[in-house]
Image 1 (cartoon, helix red, strand yellow):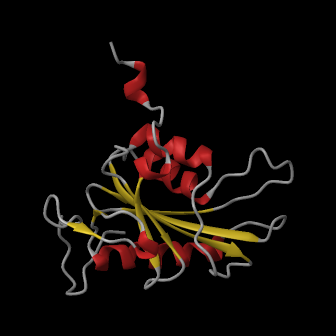
Image 2: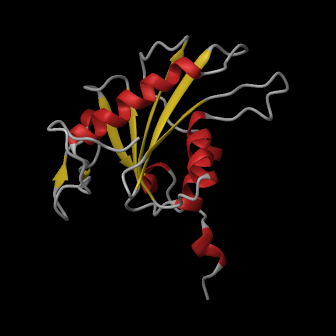
Length: 174
């Protein structure tokens, strides 16, 4: 699926002009903004992904929608396993779907989740998912949208969520 803006056309713009800032909800520090219609579309796709969640043990359903730089959206849901360790989070499911189809350049991800799919709080990514994001994303420019609805969400950079994160660049520094 590609990003479509309210007027029905697809275009390359996701970030507002360079350096423009917005204030996040909850008094968070300002971050460069994503287009509101893009955020809403990603959140909508993440919410739709909840219905595919396989979570018979925890009952905690998570959905994610990952936006590539060429504006394709890959969705994911959490998939639990009786032995727990092989469980896959929604975020990693979306990333692995995209990477398995040759995509490795990403702009943003929207994440929603809650017990029995009820979205009454924000659902931040676990540490393993943050580390997967570090593998493929620039922490300063990759956006993580945590949402309760299309109208109630926070936007963070990956760097906000994993300061001093370890990624591929650390292995090649001189």
